[in-house]
Every structure is written in structure tokens, then in C-alpha cells.
Length: 326
Image (cartoon, rainbow, N blue to C red; front, side):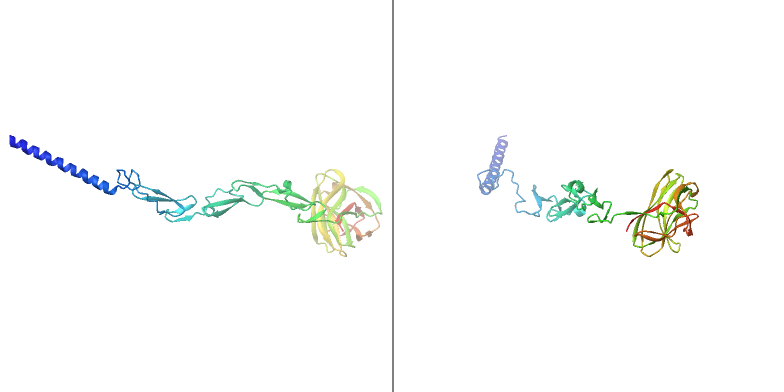
């Protein structure tokens, strides 16, 4: 029994001597590694022992670095794309990832971002652009004799009546004249036109730009009239606007645009869709042909049935006027 007790005591003494040696080794290792007076074994005073893997800037200049436990992470900055080690500029304009005004702004890519600028005719920060009213702002370039009309992103210029041009520059038109083709001779009579096409053969003594023909007649509301211009061979050259009747005796105007050349012969007339029920004033049995001073010679009243070239001489001379610019 005694010898067992002695063996146990010797074994405990051996274990105690071994623990003290590991502790010393740790202390010795710690004392060799520790140079800043703390007990964590590092050299910078930190207590966690982690290294700063971002210290040497391993990422692209346009990326941010995050130091992790045993590595680092690179993430490209906003406006750049790549793996973080290499980052390329992101073209938001081409990729259509910008937030510029979709319809009224221009997108310009810049390094790491983009710029938005409102297009001409619009105002704003580029993200939202509103139409500029150049007319009310007096920033248009219309002629003083033109009317400015605002449009989406711009404006239109239209020369005022009596002026012609592109609206930016307007030139005054010569004054309109009204030339009465009705003969001064003959008896004033009222009756139905009977012939559907009535008018005058004329030979201009000067070049005349037609604007309209007018006929003084009581035109039923059930019918219409419209101006016609024929050449000397009876070919229709142009037609005027169609005018509806109103059951009132008045001047009915049919707008028509045509240039009558000096020395050429034309027939200027109206077609009446309800000739037999309309009533008009005319000069019966005038002296023909006659001259309308300064404008027309060889003037002769003409008629025809239907919408046709009035080729027949007629003694019923209607009240017809020419609106023109000589």
C-alpha cells in the first residue's frame, strides 16, 4: 500500500512540472513577438490581430476596398462597372439608364456619370424639361408683320394678310383690286340664269393674279356655285371653291388662284348647280364686246348648259367681279 502512494505522488509532480513549461514557452513567445507592451502579440496596438488588406490599395482607383478576415473585397464606384480590380466607365446614355427627360433632353456621358441638358425650345434642369413659349416670351424671330404661333419645342411664323414670305421675312403684297366685268350698257333685268355656266371671255391687257371671282345672285340653299377658268380652246385650267347658297341676293365669292397672262384669251365663269331656280340681275342686250379699262379687252358675255365651257355668245351679261392683284 505504501508503494502505491509513492507512485501517485511522483506522477502528480511530473504533470505540474510540464504545465509550467508550456506557459513559459507561450510567455517567451509572447515576449519575443510583443514589442508594444501589450499581450496580444501584434505590433500596432490592436487587440484583434487582423491585418489591413486594403492598405496597399489593391483595387481600381474607381473602386472601394473592404478588408475582410483573411482577404479583401473590391466594388466599383457608382458610374463604373467591372470586377473591382478593373473598373470601366459606365455609359448611362447609351445603356439608357440615365434619368434625363425622355423626350426633351439630351444625355451626355461623362467619366463616372452623365449630364442632362434640355433641348432647344425647352427649359428645365434636364431631368424635367418644359416647353418654352417663344411667342409670349418675345424670343421668336418672326417678322413684325407676321403672327407667331407656339408649338411643342418651337414656334411657327405666318405672314399676316396682305403680306407674303416665310414668316421670318414678310413683304407687303400689292393691294387687291376688284374689277367689275358687268357692262355699263344694256337694261337692268332680273331673271333666272337658265344657262348653268355663265361668265365672260376676256383678254387681259396686263398680267393679273386672280384671287377670287364673285357673282351677285339670289342663290337657293339647295344649290352651289363655283368659279371656273378656261383657255381659248375650251380646256378647263382651274376651278374655285364651291359656295353654298343662302336664299339671299348677295355677292357670292369663290376663291380661285391663277395668273392670267397679258395678251392671252380666257373665259371666266361660274357653274350654278340649280340655275333654273336661282334669280340674278344682269344687263340685257349690252354693247359687246367691250373694254374694262386698264385690265381687260375683248370682253364678251358667254353661256353654256351644264358644267361646260361657255362657248356661246349671250346677251344676258351677269354681275360678275374679278378680285385680283394686277
